[in-house]
Image (cartoon, rainbow, N blue to C red):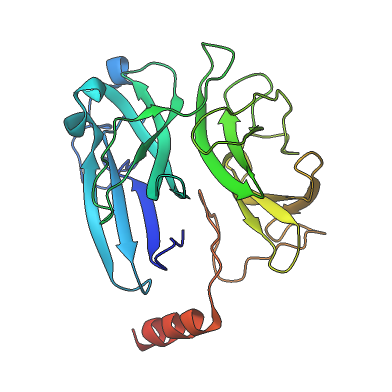
Length: 267
């Protein structure tokens, strides 16, 4: 994301699901799966840049930084949004204790974007206690915050919650908002420049091969299915990649685009 200082902020999980296969780790996960669950990990990666070429890089060990999270089972799908009231970058991500149910939390980063300064707090409480919620994405539109996330419920898929506050007060809505008949996750929303239309993009990992799906809305109540990349009849096209995962969209200026083209063409 682009911050108010015109810097770019990138947050990632350090989860590597193929680490054993690629010879980077002797075990499938960092810790045994039985107590800590599938895909267990303990850290986030925070990166900051002013030109999208040169980046700072910080590994943030949640379990070491916060004793209350010493038994953290997951630190997944982090995203960042600027909290104008606190004048801080708010990092929110999916977590759990050991192999328990997943839920979403938030914490505030320092100005250098190299660590988290506050204890992670729950962002949203799903009304069914034994169902996991993952992959939150927050977009501010007007004076409201729109949270899209994945509910491991029946039906599964994407849900939408709205609040007037950035870090609390999100109202549960049981409606499934994606049109997919197979599993999807990792929602992210972007606005079509010069319009009041917003596009919700999501990872359709249940498709073979996996693909990205898209739905468009202007009222955050009704959604138009735009299809998937390169599907027959879809307006969404992919020209130089395949099998995308957990994507995001950010707008660039013409000068920024040209700078990146010049840099990577020279490589």
